[in-house]
Image 1: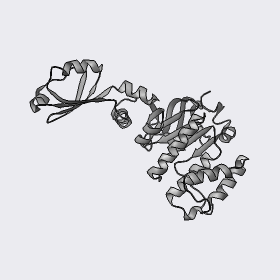
Image 2 (image 1 turned 180 degrees about the vertical axis):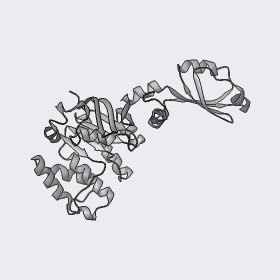
Image 3 (image 1 turned 60 degrees about the horizontal axis):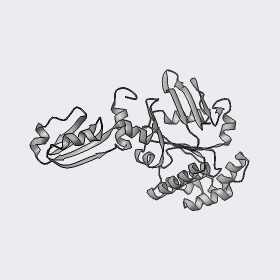
Image 4 (image 1 turned 90 degrees about the horizontal axis):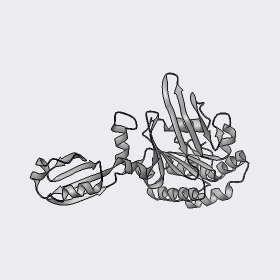
Amino acid sequence: MAAIDTHELTRRYGSRRGIERVSLTVPDGSLFGFLGPNGAGKTTTIRVFLGFLRPTGGDARVLGRDVWRDSAAIKVDVGYLPGDLRLYPWLSGELALRIFGGVRGRDLMREGRDLAERFALDLRVRVRNMSRGMRQKLGLILALAPRPKLLILDEPTASLDPLMQGLLHAHLRALASTGHTVFFSSHTLGEVEQLCDRVAIVRDGRIVANESLEALRRRAGHEVMIRWKHATQSSALQPPPFLHVLEREDVHWRGMLDGPVDELIRWLASQAVEDLTIGRPDLETLFRRYYESQEPGR
């Protein structure tokens, strides 16, 4: 059973589109990245998953249940950190854990204290006296303490320093290794690349890519950097049809290889090359390619 499974899921706000025909499968036990800039439809999708918004069309199931009819049952097994986290100023961490535990019908204090120690948060401090980073830590602790089957995190590292981000990533990897599913929504390209094994890219409310990072890179080809021995080569030489040169500057070429690496090596063997770098594009390059193309998924 997939943790999340949608088919042509649509949510409109009157004449304005939120998400359109989103088909998405999130496998159990995966670290799944949901990537897109602000306004692309990430938060709308999450709110439909949690039953906060009713779908306009299509269908979606979370943990095998319908997101609208079975919303209450779904929430029992889901931990959620919203991107716009708001907590009552009179709450302390300890009181918040007691209230959340009462709602869930279980004691969260032991797990909550362990997480607070890991994330260096004093649970006695009230929200009104917390920094933004402290409030974010408390929100994460409340989402993580029940050890839910599915964890949905919307921009979870906002206001966290790099050390805390690393600690969170390690904890999420440990959860996934024991069968828990993490749905990680972010516009931060680097951390999705570091953490997630699969990614969906959303643009203007539509999914334009949904596969493993490695598969995305393979399909994207190779980045090529060539440094020639002589500037005249850079300006006069015509590249072969399988090498798309994007930039020429002095003795340097930067381009994309659309073909086997050995073809490029054979072509360069007869040229005066000073240096050569061939590699897979990083996630930021892939992301920009999807967003700069005129057609979704191109």
